[in-house]
Length: 625
Ligand SMILES: Nc1ncnc2c1ncn2[C@@H]1O[C@H](COP(=O)(O)OP(=O)(O)OP(=O)(O)O)[C@@H](O)[C@H]1O
Image 1 (cartoon, rainbow, N blue to C red):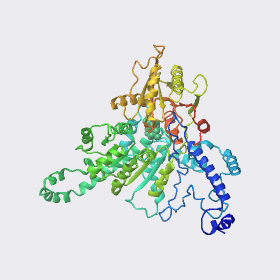
Image 2: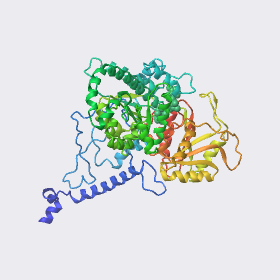
Image 3: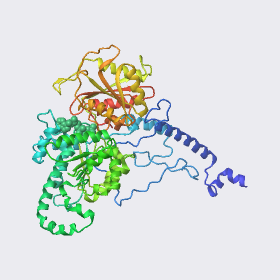
Image 4: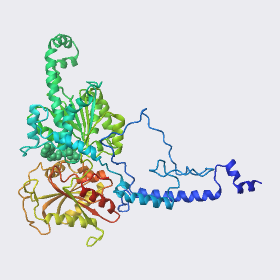
């Protein structure tokens, strides 16, 4: 009787959750198909390289609504979603109901992997413009309506003189942009400076119950090489100088009160003796502004811009990084003349703030530059720690980045729902003046040898005659500087050594490169070092050595924020894992109106379809989707 019940399937229905055997077999086959499809999908974002583990799907997904924040959930808690387990379709007594396919109003059916459905999905995705990039993760495109609205706003700001910056700050701009007689604000500056000066905020909050002392937060999302550093430095310095003036007035008014308090202070213990010497305007180790950046190289770069501004407008900047000795850091921070702006990496500043919490007690302006990196896993704990410590006194918070990944967008929307979004029209697009070429490494004469293809490409660039760039109105310097980007740090040395063997002046640039060598290396690429007479020789002296070309082989370390103005050529030795990496790496050339050229080496197993789509988007001047 038991056997009879089992055959009829009644037993399964009443006691056991298992479906009848035929249905079980079908479900099992379905699970196998789903697993295979998932494995295939997981392999797609990046090619397996040199027999290493297949790359994991990336978190680096660009946000598709940068200009408009994603609204946080009304009650502050995210909706609970039922997780779909791999085996959640087992042990059911009834077949799951037919669910509409994705995009038709419901979640996808567990049977969505059926051949007919897959065919349907393929047909649908082929009609979409950027199929491969979507697989890899998508890039944002701003709607055309909001693009033209932003463009109009930008046109309104046609000179620095029109901006309500203090006179001394206006004068400092000329020092920060040497050799340029007259420069207009860039789109990033036209969008950011008025907002940070409070011009737009006043218009927006007029009549509203906005707190005067409350925190104003901004997100500045603008393309690479668009002058974001000055876009935040100018308003910050302006605010510091104005604050100084106010404090001097307050100080004069409080003089009588302070004189009375002085007697009491003198009776205090040893610490009390120092109290009267404290000057609000020049308080040691209590800066008014903090600028966070992801690397020591960027600390030095932003520090140099701040220093150039400080000739005309007096303020003290302390660029500190782990590459400086403890004595130097101490003397910069605890300078008796005070410090106004501290430029640091988050881990270093967070560790200093742990032992000296007062260092963040007076901060009114906090700038998080390269926010896409500083809110990624590695930096997020120290960045948020600084943010929380500085919050009580903070008046303006600015997040600054060339790409806005979705994780950052969500974080900002949840933590700072009132954040003003300052987005330039060309966000997430690579400028048209940067061309992208492709070298098929699989073909003759390389036959899959990427190093050979790389060396050959560099020789071709080096031998080409000096280029004429109409945007500069003069002949380009004969020494060519080329950046080669690899995905793995270990490859930097390997590739650089191979190139050196082929007669190319190539060096690896990574975290462990000797700091003094690193600084020299970078200076020649960022235009801060003058080309030596030897560098200016036009013809190679040794036919086996490429004399007029310098190459840096690096990873993402060299792609974030470094202002490599004299770089015309970028070689993507590896196809980048994400579109974000594409933007940052290609963003090292074609900066500030200059022309540039990127060359991707597509080798065995590389995603040629992704490269093709990036190229097409660049040709059309569109954001990468
Ligand atoms: N208004 C301007 N006119 C001309 N050049 C400018 C102007 N503002 C900045 N620059 C120059 O543009 C270059 C790039 O500036 P900056 O490094 O600030 O760009 P960025 O937007 O921060 O780039 P990234 O996103 O790669 O970090 C610098 O060499 C700077 O001197």
